[in-house]
Length: 316
Image (tube, rainbow, N blue to C red):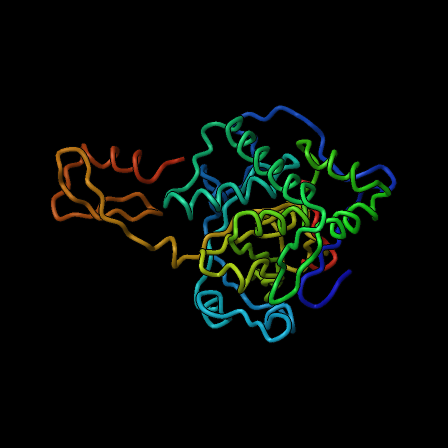
């Protein structure tokens, strides 16, 4: 059930006879959400930007003549680097990544990691929504890329088969935290939100540089009227990793933000009735003579809010 466009197959190091893979349940403190790294800030953002490159063949050209165009066209992909943000590696990383990407495009602010339990709640809700969408209407069409689509019941059966479980058992397990989400759940959320979700993988461009290769464009061009969400399937050791030593199949998801979005500015009114132009990414108010006392207020109210190939299940 694979093709050059979007293969939703899963692979993992787990024994396929014991059900869908999952991560060990444990309690996380705010300082343990990810492995410490000098290249990752307190807010989870990696210190550098990364260039993107297109996929190969039909994965980039679409299916049955439906091409990836407009804001997602290859030419724009190459011109717009992305910032990468780490998410907790607790078995729910795919859902965490989509939660914080969705938060950004809907609120123009980045999710704040102050409350890990709240992030878990939001990701758990997204997980339940995905499984509900997959299982509630067996004959529902789930649009993939170009004109290609899956029938929901066929997709669940194909997802369950490698793990030697029934479709019902698959859905029961996937509803629970810490079970690794993958392609079927991303496809369900893409159709539920009616928003494209684009997937990238690590590509060793040189001995010192990674680039992110676009592996699939769920929901494009069908839902391209909405801004796409972008997530990366990476080696969990990234970015402290030498190009060429990465795992063949990603085992951790991270959130991506195209810099053309991060450079957006918006005019806001703050305390005292003055107007300031605020950089949404940096949180800095721009004005000739801004009142320093108002800057924290702006940051708090406006800025802080807080593939398909062989893989497509993540263990973190």
